[in-house]
Length: 153
Image (cartoon, rainbow, N blue to C red; front, side, top):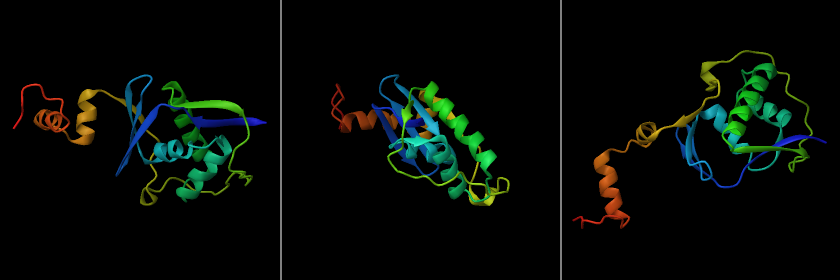
């Protein structure tokens, strides 16, 4: 048996053009993931081993070699586990993917879109910036959703 990783329950994801925002219902934290961290996160709907995820990063970002991909995956898994978004267990993957780890040589190439993974907890101001919502828009939106107590037009 080997260690596999899987997303925990009680997590909502909002995909964005440049990554995603994840909301953990248990911890009530919003977390911003850049595209490379999001690639790992979105793969964890099903259990995957670290090797599976390294292969995935190498396939998606052709210029990234296996050691750099492993470092990126390990960082992302560590951060996601700290934030209670990912759990690990001994088991097998459901995908049955037994391909060997990628051994592609190369370094990061900005043209293929790879950037070191970023996992950032957002405060309220950051969250509003991500979704580009102003205080006025929040007020109007609360009226649309029926939460307005003063009777909006």
